[in-house]
Image (cartoon, rainbow, N blue to C red; front, top):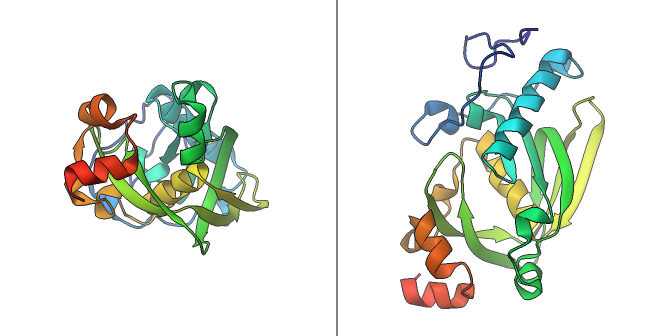
Length: 211
């Protein structure tokens, strides 16, 4: 079944077509996404789109994806984190990051509120800025509101790594990339970040890179 709505500025997309992750430089990543219209909620078209987004996120692999990252200008985000994805981290590293598993979550038309309190700096990468990473300062706790794929109200207050993922993905539907928020002197190849800095305390990274 074809998707029933024109979701990429005019091109009709069908299930047989792949949704590659678009890269920085594509205008869809710099254009605020449109709210999902009421008439689309709960339809097979929306279900198909969400299925494609989840497939793209898991195959990448990643812990979050926004519809603009597959060229679709709607306010839809998907995210999940699993024990397998964080298996390499020590208990201390998981605690420092606030890393915790959570099930697949789909949010339509997300609105984010940054909660008062501590902020945190950690490396982030992006499937749409492939091959690079940088330190980004984010609120440690947030509250997101929106709708489920069936149109039910959703509210989620969370801290730690899930809060970072939410901020990253909501930025995407606003036309913002993490490179707009990064500590610029920390920008590096993903390989360098993984081999040199993955186990280093953030304070040590910032000192070494003079951020």
